[in-house]
View (cartoon, rainbow, N blue to C red):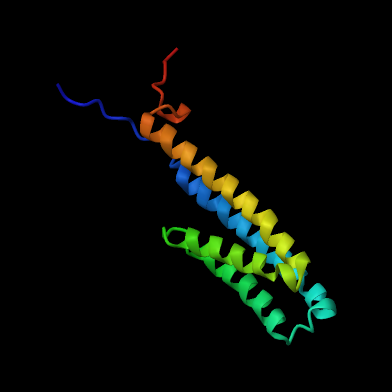
Length: 133
């Protein structure tokens, strides 16, 4: 008795998740870059170590958008979130950005896991047999 194979969906839903994650990372990079005036006013200026760290994180988020096809990028993105949260004692406003986007990323990763489970079980709508009328 042969095992029944689960049909592949017509469109790969994981490509959609990469697009959503890329869009989220771009929005986060913009938000982090918009925090630079706060760093300039409260954090010792943009040319301080705090300013350069915020700029580096914003640039790293944009770079990660282009590398989302690799599996090692998601832990890097989560590490960048922890880098933002580490600003809690020196610049709480930047840390709040990190906490908000960490919550969004955790939710997106949970959604991706659920879709992967449903895809493996063959229960996605695009995996269902079509009925001709």
